Image 1 (cartoon, helix red, strand yellow):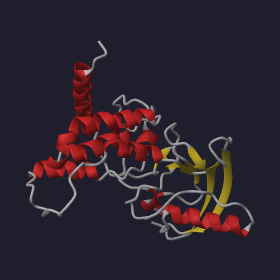
Image 2 (image 1 turned 180 degrees about the horizontal axis):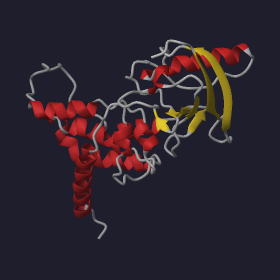
Image 3 (image 1 turned 90 degrees about the vertical axis):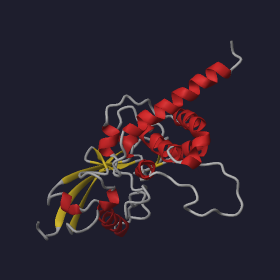
Image 4 (image 1 turned 45 degrees about the vertical axis):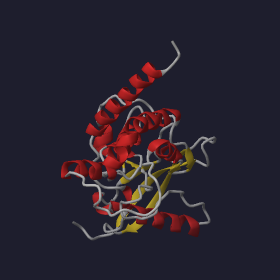
Length: 259
């Protein structure tokens, strides 16, 4: 691996707001170390733009450790860029070559309206969580962590699903802009544990309803979501979500008075 500095051409999407049309801008950056993270490279670009009296590129980041999920960028046609099992902030410039042209875009989905440039509004995910991503319990004196025994297989399924960071890569990769991998991860995380079972069916139904209301598309089980997920959430979660959703839907049909 060469330690020499890179010179790169960046094609970056610029858009003032969701109601104003955007377009690509081309910028040159140089003296980019292959050891830099991708977001550090964007910081270099923004320092250059500010030095020229130009408006910096708006993008989102927080932890820069692959935990928060806010660094949602579409890089060279792939969510979070080249590599598997990593977020944009974990992507380093050694994944590219000197002289490369890199195209950088925001997530593109009805459920993720553009705020500005590369930043999108992911509050649709918040609406889904509010619809059922919690466990209703009586408050009071806290109980010991081991007071409810959980078999290891159930704990592992729940923990694997809980690894979802809600970045939205699944939506960006899906041709239908479906967020069902995200919804299923949150549902399976809670529905697998004893604390979440009393509300299991209602949770699945309510979160799918919120998913549809937020403007996300239908799942057609083509697998782009799993392939793009930086935390490698499995599509088997979607099957579990569909099962609980359909059971609750049938129950609702039998109990309603519409007939």
